[in-house]
Length: 182
Image (cartoon, rainbow, N blue to C red; front, top):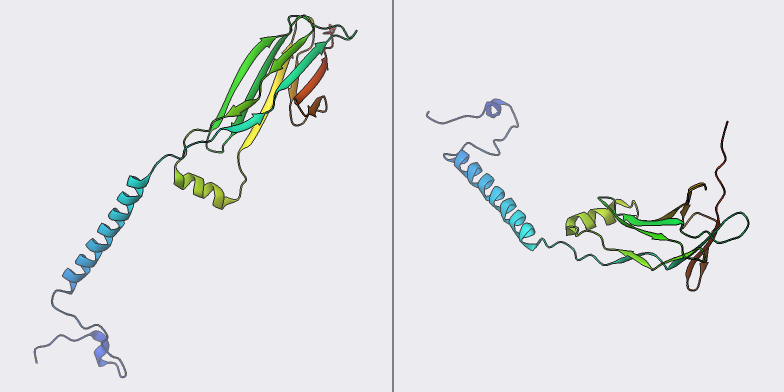
C-alpha cells in the first residue's frame, strides 16, 4: 500500500485527527502572512490616528504676595526673591522661574502661575490612568536672599509661614542676619 501513516496510528484507540495533507505547509504560511498583515494594518491605523493630546493649562499657584522684613520689623529693600514653579508629569518635568527685587516696603507680588504640559500621546495618557500612580504633582517655592542675611527657601504647600487667603497666598518673612562662626 502506498499511503502515509502517522506514528500513533499503530496504537490502539488513537485517531489521526489531522492527517498530513498535500500543501499543509503552504496553508500555514498563508495563515501566518494573513496574521502579520492584520497586525501591520492595526499598527498603521493606530499610528494614523495618533494625535498628541492637546495639553490644557494647569493652575500651579494662585497670586502670591511676599513681605520681607529684618529682625527689627523694618522692610528689607532690594532683597532678591526668586519664584520657581513647575509640575512633574511623570514622563517629564515642566517648570519656570521669575526673579524680582523687593520694593521700598519690602514687598514683591507674583501673579497666578500655570503650566502647560508637553503634548502627550494618547497611549501614554491611557497607561498613566491605568497604573494608578496618581496624577501630575505641581510645586511652587521661593528663594529669598539679601547680602548679610541667611538665604531662605519656602515651599508654598508645606511651609507654615504661607497663609492662603481669598486673594491668594500671603507671606511675611523675617530675614535673620548671618552669623560668623569661629
